Amino acid sequence: MTDKTVSALTEALEDEYKARATYRKVIETFGPVRPFTNIMEAEGRHASALIRQFERLGLQPPEDTWEGRIDAPASLIAACEAAIADEIENAAMYDRLLAIVDDPAVRNVLLNLQDASQNRHLPAFRRCLARSK
Image 1 (tube, rainbow, N blue to C red):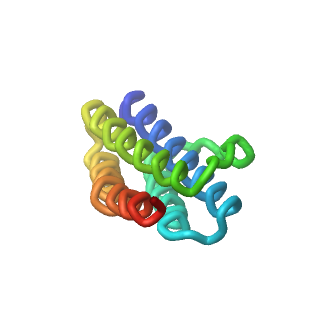
Image 2 (tube, rainbow, N blue to C red):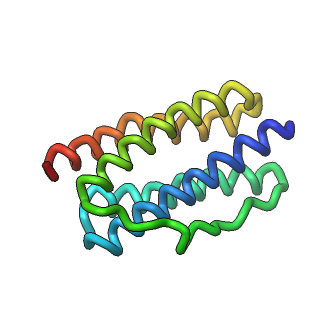
């Protein structure tokens, strides 16, 4: 295990925490709208997968400090647009992290999370935007 692997795990986990808090804020503001409800739950599963890697490596994962730090979007359209942008940024983050991680198990988790983001979350948010306009 390298410092780069720990740094990558930490950044990925913080990103999952932030996404979960963001989608929770959308739900608090606009009600239980899809795909935010489903994807908020998925972000929790993603965080758990990363936490398991911390535990496997004998490390303490960072606490989730994102609650209360997210502002509500102005509209559901704005929420969908922001979610699309976040998922696109998420793919770039995973590309960058995968380039520095050599632990096979961590790489596998990061690849799975990137796949979920790009092939499930991003299309769902694009559909959300199309429905909301």
